[in-house]
Image (cartoon, rainbow, N blue to C red; front, side):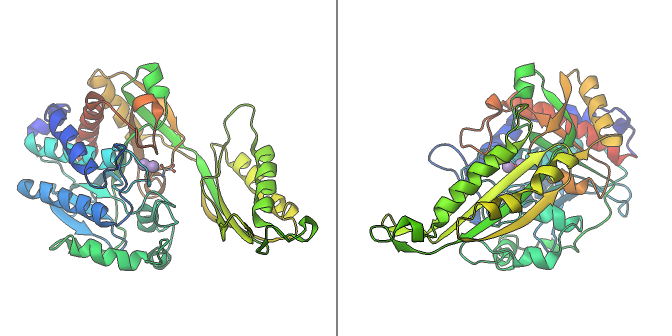
Length: 421
Ligand code: HGY
Ligand code: MN
Ligand code: MN
C-alpha cells in the first residue's frame, strides 16, 4: 500500500472545485427546465445520458462500470485486494418533475470527484471504492416507488415487483431499462446485491439549518420514518345541473372531507409531524360533471416510530368515516422506519471535518435517502452540505461551489479511511 495513503488528507487536496461545479452544470443540462431547474425522471433519456456521462468520465482513469438488474450503476476504482468488499458512495441522478440541480446528483458527483482525487493523489487503497447511482430514488415522480434501486439492492423490495412498476404511460421499469442498457454499451452486468464494507452518501441538506447556523458540514445522525398512502374514492359521475345534492356521490367532496379530517389528525403544535398531500386527481375533470372518481396521496413523516404507528394507523378509519356515500380504498404503499447513524462512518466524517478545519454540526435528516436502505447492509453515514434557504424539490434549488467541494473533500478523506480498514 502506497505509504502516502497514510497521510489522511492527501486525497482531499486533489478535489477540484471547478471540475466538480462544471460537472453539476453539465448534468443540469440533461433535463434542464426553462426556469433553471431539472426534470430528469428515473430511466428517461436524460437519466440514461447522465449515467453514460459518468461512465465516459471514468474511462481515462481506468475506472470500470457495471449495471445490476434494477439499473443501479457502479463506477469502480480498484484496490490492492480485488476480492475485498468495496466501500460504496453515491446517491441518485433522477429528479422530481420540477427538481433542482443538486438533489441526488451532488452525492453522485461528489463520490466521483472523490474517486478522481484519490486517483490523482496516487493513493492505493486496500478495498475497491465504487461510486453508486441508485435507480429511481424519487418515488412518484415517474414510477410510484421511491428508493427503488437501493431497496432492491438491500433486499427490502423484490426485484420482480420493482421491474413491474409502471409509469403513468404504462411503461414498466423492465421496459425502461432496455433503453438504459442501450445507452450504456459495453457496461458489464452484475448480480443484484453484494457485500459492502461501508456506504457514505453526500447530499445537500434540503433544509435551512446548516445555512442558518453557518456550518459547512452536516454529520447526519439519522433519517426520519415515512408512511405513504394512496386513497382511491369511487362515487358516481353526474350532471352538474340536474343531479340533486342529496343523491350525489361526489368523490371530490368526499376527498375534501377526508383531507379536512386528516389535517386535524396530523395537526402538531410542535411542528414535528410532516403531512403532505402532493397529488390529487379527479375524474372526469370536467366542470359540468360531478366527479365520480378521486385519488390523493398522503406522505406522512416523523422521527419516532410510535408516532408513525399511532397516527398512521388512523388513516384508513378516518377515510372510511368521511366517504360520503362513496367507496374508498386506502393502500399504504411505502413504510420506512426511522434510522439512527452511529459509529464507524459518522465518526470518520467528524474526524475528517475536524482535520480539515471545516465548521460542522450533527443534524437529523427530514428527507429520505438511499442511505436508509444501505444502513441495513453495511456501516452507513451521510454528509450534508448547505443549500440556499434550504429550498429543494424546487427549480430554484441552489448551493455554493465552495460548500460542494468541502463536502467532497471530507468524503474523499473518509473513503480512503474506510477503504484501508
Ligand atoms: O422524498 C424524499 O424525502 C426524497 O427527497 N425523495
Ligand atoms: Mn429528492
Ligand atoms: Mn435526494
